Length: 264
Image 1 (cartoon, rainbow, N blue to C red):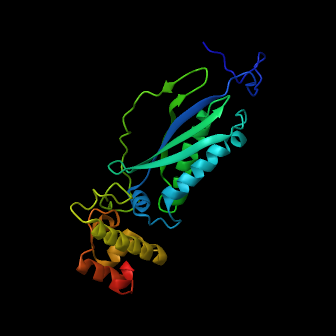
Image 2: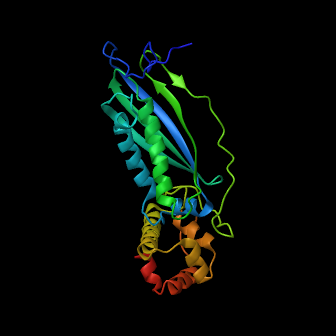
Image 3: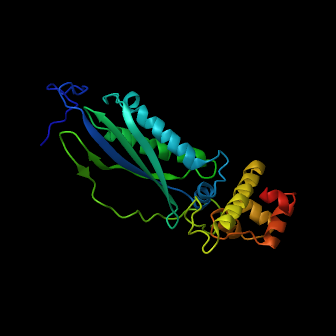
């Protein structure tokens, strides 16, 4: 059995001496998963969380955490990173967000802890930005997916199935589910010209900005307007290219505004 390198002969904690090790290119990839309630998940996907752009904040937090790992984990070496990135993936059926952190360096020791810390802090940031909606969100797992470089060589984690998460709602009725992707793509609006997609995207962004500026919650706004919240989410996520005229009129009336103000 391998001896724990962070303990000396007497069992005392120590920072490993890497002076004689060769500098090699090292890469580590880690993931974290956070399970959200229906409403909190929809707020992340639709970009309507009151604190702002949740994925953007999580990415920045994760990258900053990777750079500061040596200050947070007592026996980690301070490492000059050459790359750090955070990818955010939405799992709509399970209402979970998966964070994948990739960290690289050319150094005498690896960056596994940097990748794990980045993924964990990104998940905690998502929790912080959605806790006003639901404080029951659960960070399901933080684990190393792979590492390469150094004396120990390559490691790859065994694949596992996505956890079967029980969908929770903070309301009596579950909100209908939106499309998975936050970003627009050519698949979101089939058989439409680039100019048409651009116009639809512009209207969608204007609608999202209107909601944010008025601090409108999709579920409550739809209830006040007597429309289905699914129509709001479908438009925000690109599932439908436009908002039905009668729905837009009801929403504008509920917000005490004009229809044109929703899209400019």
